[in-house]
Image (cartoon, rainbow, N blue to C red; front, top):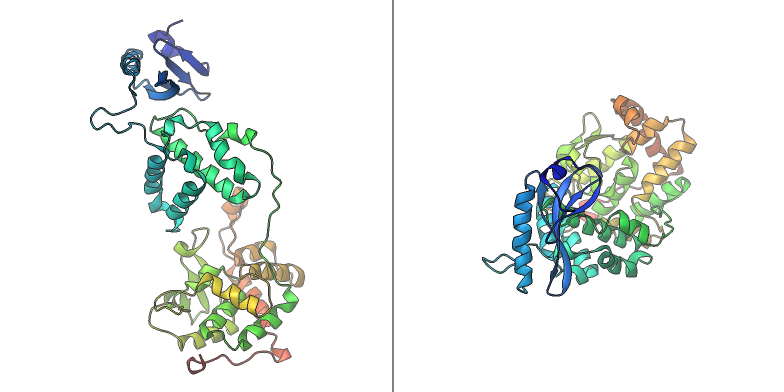
Length: 396
């Protein structure tokens, strides 16, 4: 039965309600109404969006549907723009470029756009030239199946990025549903995922490790200093490697990290132990004027994120710098009576419970200072006599 203006206005039942020339009104479970049309174009069934109700009335939708149907009968594609012959519906590659351009200003990592393009070009090459309106779940399935079990994290990100691009296409009226959404979740095989934690060192070996770092004959002084500073502050690698002198308050012994450099996008104050102050005083001698506390080999650039791991591996410690945060957490839990909230604040963790987070107004700084001082005493182990003099610039 053909649609009527009254039926279009009052219908609420989710589903597809058809009219002439392949025109149909789709009603979503949330009540959104959109016009789409299914046609045979050059021997292939295609479905494309025409517009949304009530912005486009039934009469207007019929006129547009007939115009497109008539073009298809001549063997042409009604989805092309007659002015320049380019597809009105962008290809997946063109849609990808638009999505990256839209989101790039909001991404904290400037390399995110390159990572999107690289992963999709590598693994989703089969759909790159397809009009974004023609991509179906089976096409996405063909992209993901070869890597779903063997490159789980890569596959998850590729799926997520395809979904984001297709959801942009929905918003632009180029398609009706997300082919990488719920339908695909049910079709892809279940893969048991074991969470891999960063390699960490037992806390009773921290002093031994830092002793080896200080004594490393071939490591640059800045690398040694920054590694120990990262361990003592329990900060993330980038927070230490990109630390700047204007973030250091010597008088109050505070390292103030701005929100722009924090994972949770919130400023974070780190109490500095006397040992950290000693490290910073020596680092001053290495200051090259670029503003970085621990500059890398190239002037004005921070130490590479792999440099610390490489040094640790050379010294026989198969751990990551991030793993020392776990070591700190284990030590604080097992060797002190520190409250859970204080330990979480020390690691700059976000409180996931919204109700609890609403009442967590304090950063518990005074208690964290005591904890960090105790941690430094444990790591340095002065009584064991393993605190070596720091190297000077001349010995580098």
